[in-house]
Image 1 (cartoon, rainbow, N blue to C red):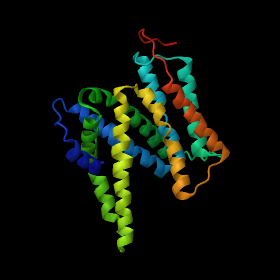
Image 2: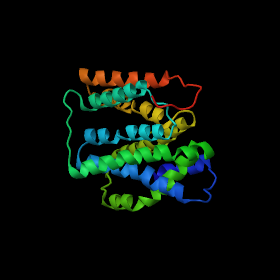
Image 3: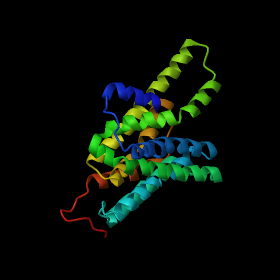
Image 4: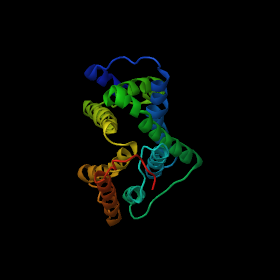
Length: 256
């Protein structure tokens, strides 16, 4: 996060944050840094499938919040969309047999990751609308990265760097890839959607992430998907299509 924020700082050259600083600092710590750390901790104390499914709870949290605030015009279509997205994610991640590993620590960190994801999605809107998505992405990374620097420094001191040039170059490539593709573009483009879509719509669209992961696993690692996983991917695509084909009413928000 700190490396990504530094890169954006030189490329975007955003204006400096002005008072009050507390909302931005809170968003950076609890949203950006918090969602990252808790998600990785959920993987550590359970497994990737369990952590991903628990993190997906951010979507109903966001939808419920926006509906309660009148920002989302709820309907049976939205219920169907959330169900399809959730079921598709379960099938795609778990395959034919969903290997859920629930531990007290894994459950706690997974739920915290869901709330962290919901918080940075909802909390970033005000900054996206006033300053732009790349502005809040840059400062969110820098502040969150500085706060988590002690964790990274401790891990780095224990890391055994490879002795060969080839292995070192591979590590540099992977770090660069995660920094640019998995951090800068992932967060920046995600928040850019808040300029035109609701947080719930952005959340449903982002549920297509497992599809991209599955495709990458097939292309680069030769992982063959099961019929159940293909079905899960199809359900996610249907959910995204339902979001894309929504029709906004000219009247005010209404809960149906």
